[in-house]
Image (cartoon, rainbow, N blue to C red):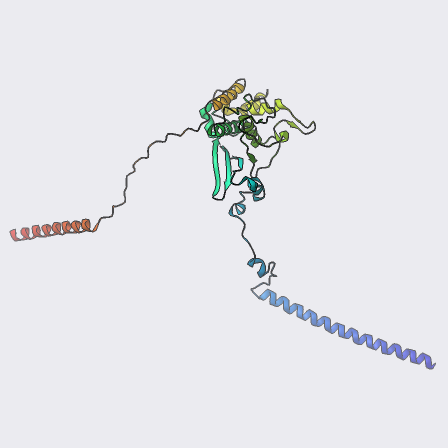
Length: 339
C-alpha cells in the first residue's frame, strides 16, 4: 500500500508540472498572436514597405558599364574580338572582314579592317546600285545578295589592280568555288562577318558570300550553309543553289503571280529571268567602279528673318525716322496756321 501511494503521488506531481507547462505554452502562444496582430497593423498603416536589398553597395561601386554598341544590341564583341585579332609578328598588316548587312530595302556589303582609330572601309557595294547594271526589281533576295557580293569583289580587285589576275568563277553554276593563288600575288583574303545574324542554311548572307567567292576573293568557308545543301547526303545540290542564284521560278502559276509580281510589272517573264541575271553578272564584271550620282544644285530659299543691322545702319535709320516725324509735325503746324 505504501508503494502504491508513493507512485500515485509521483504521478500527481508530474501531471501538475505538465499542466503548468501547458499553461505557460498557452501564454506564449497568446503573446505571439498579439505581436503578430500588432505587426500586421503597423505594416498596413505604414506607407513605407520594407524591401530586402538584392545587390550590395559594393556591387554598384564595382559595376562596369558595357560598351555602347553592346548596350544597344548591335555588336557581338565576343565574335568581333576573334575576327579582328591579328598576329603580332604581322605588325601593322590589316585584317580584312567581308561584312554583309541587310535592311528592309537594301543590302550592304563592305570590306573593312580594324584600327585603333576605328574601322576603315576599303570598299562598299549596295544592292541599290544594281539598277545601273540592269536589275531593277528584287533588290533584297538571294540573287540580289549574290550580285552585291560579286560587285564588291570585282570592285575591290579593281582598286587593288588584281582584277585581271583573279577573275574568279565567270559562270554561276552553283557549285562550291575557292580561288587558287597564282605565281605572283596571293589572292585578296577576308573573313566573313555575319554580325548578329543566325547562320541558317540558305540564308541570304551566304548568297553574298558565294558572289564574293565567284568574284575572286579568298574567304574561308564551308558549303554546308549554301542553299541546296542536303544534310542527310552531306553534299551540296548545285542545281538547287543555281536556281537560288538566278531566281528561277517554279512551274506554279499562283506562286509566280504572288512572289514575282514586281518582275511581271517590269515585263520580266519567268523564261527570261535566267538571261536577265546572266546579263547583270556580265555588266558587273565589265565595269564595277562606283559612279557618283549627279545631284541637283541646291536651291536658294527665301529668308524671311530680319537681317541684323550694324550700329551705323541703326543710327542712320533712327535719324531718318526722326526727320520723317519732324517733317510731319511741321506740316501739321502749317495747316493750323492757315486755319
